[in-house]
Each structure stands twice: as C-alpha cells, then as structure tokens.
Image (tube, rainbow, N blue to C red; front, side, top):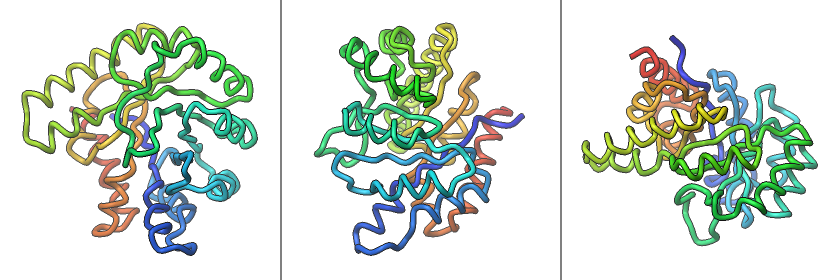
Length: 247
C-alpha cells in the first residue's frame, strides 16, 4: 500500500547558497532532482526576511517544475500579492517570527479567524489549494473549516523532538494526539497533511496513521543528502513512508 504523497522542501539548499553568496547550490536544480527521485511536489517558504528562498527562486520554480509547487507563506499582504501573481498549486499559511530559526508551532487560526477568512478567500478564488499549518487541536481544526481552508497541515515538531530525545511515552502521546487530530479533520471534510522535523523513523510512524494525504519534509532530507545524495535520500524516505502505510 503506497504511503502519503511526499512534498520535498528545498529551503535549506537556498540556506547553503546564501551562506556563501552566489548561485550555488541551486534550489531549482535540487527541486528537479527531487522530481526525478519521486517527489510528488516541491515546497518552498518565501520568508519575509528572504533568509533562504528568494523571489527569483519562486519564479524559476514555477517555470521549471512539472510537479506541484507548495508555496509556504506568512499571512501578510506582501505574500498574498506574490501568491496571487504566481498562482502556485498550493499555498500553505504558516506562522512566522523574524527571530525564529525555524517554524516554532502552529498558526493560531481560531484567534484570528475573521482576518484569515478574508486572507484565504482571494487565494482560493485564484485557484490555489490553501492549507493552514496548525497544531492538532480540535478548536484550530474547526476554525480552519469555518474559514474555508480545504486542507490543514499538522505540526509534527513536538512528536519528532520527543522521538529524538528518546522519550517514548511523550512520543507516543504526541502520536495519539496527531491521530485524533486527523480523525477530527476528516470528520470536518478537510484533507490532512503533516510535517516538521520528520526523519525516516518518524515519517514511518506518522504514515501508519490512517488518513494523512501528504508529508512535507525538508531539513532532514537536505542534511542526509550530504551523505547519501539527494535522490537516494528521497528514495529512502519514500520507502520508509510506504512501509509505515503498509504496517
């Protein structure tokens, strides 16, 4: 039984490029290699401070890819305008803080429901498949359904962190919380994705949860590519996901 779709996040190819300056390594080349290796889509997060992905990368990705682009973005007027100009297949709305090294948790949709409903509507009208990056919390899930977002992406960072730390009880509790979130979301008619901090082992475990349609994974795959090559790292991830779904 095949596992969920795999979206490969190429942000940190751009991180390496920007650390030195210049054009190498090229995130578009990484995206095309990911396509060849079996990625079902590419994710790129254009942050407000442009710390990794740049505006030109989004233009180049839109021109080069044959698989869908998932455009991660903050809920700002600037990012909405960029998404409406490019009209990527998907737009994932994420929380963003200038000082954070990586996304630290889910978006507070229930706390900002009226504004986010107005923010999402033009993206949907432009044909973008909007998803909201949230915690597996029933109130947040219900708010996503109310604002008209057809997809949610559940934050798996706490689950992954517990696994890395060897805290099996906390890990299993987080996995049960995620599974319940999937159930609530499916009952609300939402498609469910998941991501953040996943490696081969945690992706395998997540894929054993019925109802998850897609995983988005980046940092781990780019790190593993130093040792395995990007295509082999993606193939191994795909195999781990399929094993989990078949368990």
